[in-house]
Length: 91
Image (cartoon, rainbow, N blue to C red; front, side, top):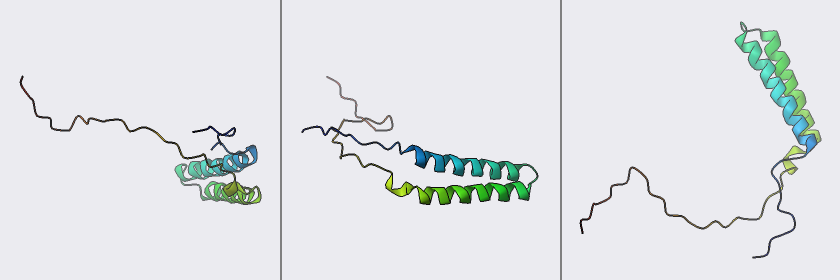
């Protein structure tokens, strides 16, 4: 089977990573707000940051950023579980 020149990537583009970083930062701020008391103002600030990250994600079209690789064909390997019961045979 011939290999294509472009193997694809699931890494995403920098603009998509920016959206993800904003969302993670908002989630972190909101989580800290919940664990400190809870501090509802900090929680809602975190939720607002997550919402801004969601808008950024929509603007950069994050859902079309994934490049699908060609199907990989991997040979099957025999697997033995330690929980299988094997009959002992004596020679």
